[in-house]
Length: 185
Length: 280
Image (cartoon, rainbow over all chains, first blue to last red; front, top):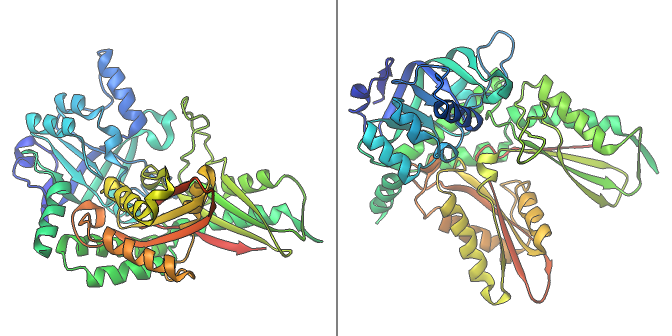
């Protein structure tokens, strides 16, 4: 049974989620990937305000393909998360409550997640058309010059994700394989 | 000599860029369905059924299969009896990429310089590989390659003494280390032999072999089966959530090599293993 998670994405709500849970997310989330993370980190370093309220925000690691006329977005699957690992702990400290991407995270990120009570969700990599169908609205809000890497506010409905790392640090990328292999014995 | 206008290459590239990003080859989608039917681990079967749904939505609604519509890898097999006229072939290919990515609403993912990183805005230049072959035809193959999987590629110059075992262990280890990053289930393209640059190209070209085509050399056909079995015993599973289906296929291409060397390369592709060809 899928768990429905609706905005606002408070840490209190996220705390009940466990690695392996299938979740349907609805509400506003923000896209940012490599270049946007670098810029936001630099902005924090200079003491500037970020382009969106970071407190209890969910950031989706994604660079969508262009939208056809009349559609909010093009293909919109997740990108590989480890490239955001150097930037993630700082944003989590600033209040970000969730990340959506794909693939395993570093120990540093997981430690920061436990400390801050945040959650890492995995969307299905390579399923950009399926994810696009959950996007109701997309609004460009910062770094337009970055093209696909710009920051967009997406209003999503029932976006299917899996809890990959929960707020206690349980990591599906380790436990999923272990549990499967134990079952095969 | 048969005259071939390079404009035909532009048209072929533009059309292939669009088609490959919206429609997956039947060999790949059939293999995904077979794996979903035999997958006993529920989270794995769930991911595979969502991947099947993605393929359906992409084709029916005109949304690219994956937002990473790739670096444009173009393979040109040019018949030596064909005379290419009407301009530069490189320019003709890049013009096709530009048109295909614009008109197909595909993502532009290329930066002009690896360190200064400014997007070229039209997904050019393409990675072009030329080959001169007998005949008077020109075969254009287009394989958009996403970098989630490309980043997981590995190459090693083994010593001949490491032999078959060294090669097999290297391939399995490359897939294990990649884990959930390259969007498993993957296709592992393996190159063995040649030299440093040739082996990487062999691994890339191995990804163009249809998944339902058996290796014509029984020795390597058996090795492909064995490697697939070992990889699917790792437990990584679709998306790395655990399960049997870590790879859809392992494909090997080889070339003669030097008495002192045993080069091996692995080029990993995600489940959106895109490629198609047009013969002019």
